[in-house]
Length: 198
Image (tube, rainbow, N blue to C red):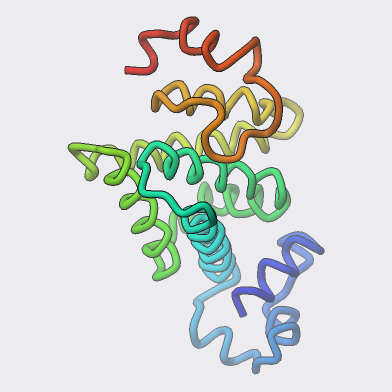
């Protein structure tokens, strides 16, 4: 059901996708969808959280395997930003749903995603993951909104540069979008904003 949801919303958009469509694509009874999820919005949030969780997990575990907390944080940032670039309709719909009356759905898939992000913050070296994890989540959500803003999108490399600078990460870590950071080399970036890397 979750996979069918992300596929259909990405193809048709949220409004044009019905619970019956999702049940048909998943090969499930319509009543089964309603049994597990109170509505389409909650189903979509769970489906996108699952996609984000799996994308993040794959990025953290990809070869070459590493225990370097800085590399893992870079991979985490790149995974979420990359998903935003690869699935803009899906991510825009997801973010719009969070701002609706139902708000943020804390489902098992969201908890798995949260666990991975929190663990990444700990491996990065956070002394206070209870505060640092929500901050990372907020910064990533803000970057996703900025990339997807209709009519005034921010370029992904610029947002990545800001996030990497915030956490003192070298541009070459993770999966760089190609070339140098906006405005020059990674060393130039560090020299430009020395206070922001602390």
